[in-house]
Image (cartoon, rainbow, N blue to C red; front, side, top):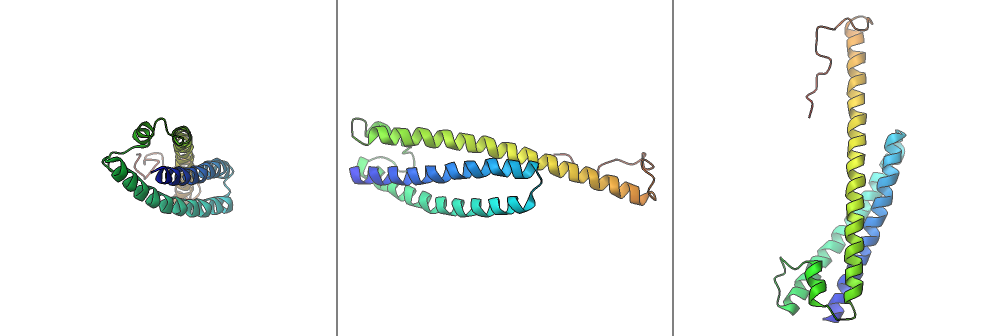
Length: 161
């Protein structure tokens, strides 16, 4: 079983590297949104898709490794977590490395979730501004260029979420 444990550690390290790269891209994405750099956003999204596809393959391999390890341990593959696996191999040479990778992976995923949440908020604000600007232009055109002439109508046509 040490071979399986080493394989899952290697797999998790590869996923960790990919998530760290995604975190860097997420930071770049924030800057691109703030600077309204559409070309840079396209590049970042393209790179993100490549990394996400790599992680999908790694995740499929990790699921298989988890199943194999669960069988070797006599555990349920559906409920075997990294924490439970680390507990099961306590005292073995791979224990510390598995715990380290698990902790680093959790930290990076938390950071990535936070950055993605901030990016969603930035994009939402940018879209709200676009809708606002379009409504101003629409009102101006409909009123022959007289700003504020449509005060008796609602300003936004879109529903607020």
